[in-house]
Image (cartoon, rainbow, N blue to C red; front, side, top):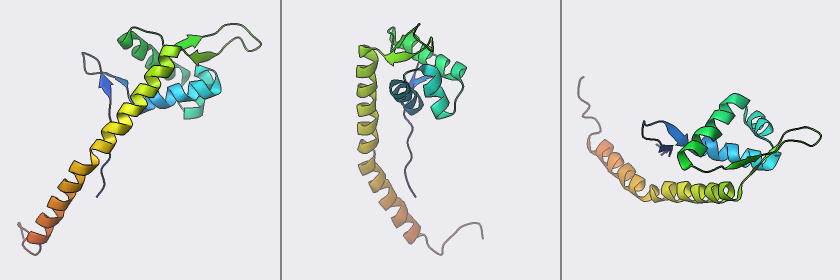
Length: 126
């Protein structure tokens, strides 16, 4: 038995706008220098990536990406200073939150194992 937790920030309608996938996307954009290349490296469509970033920016009321026009490839994007700080803040939060679950999970796992041992051989329904 192991614990797997997914953390999301949701809007007023309960729609996800920030989670590990968006964090990975922002990181990929920072490394690749464009939203399209970042999306491609994660195996998601540009339109999906664009929608993820737009929803995040709409909810935060701030730009996380600076879109660039011009240059030889006429495209590109980088994280804004706010985007870099937000990304670091969220990453720290999600790591801390997941680590904080380990102790209660260990207690739960111990209780379940004790329950299993106590009821061994006494399965109902047979």
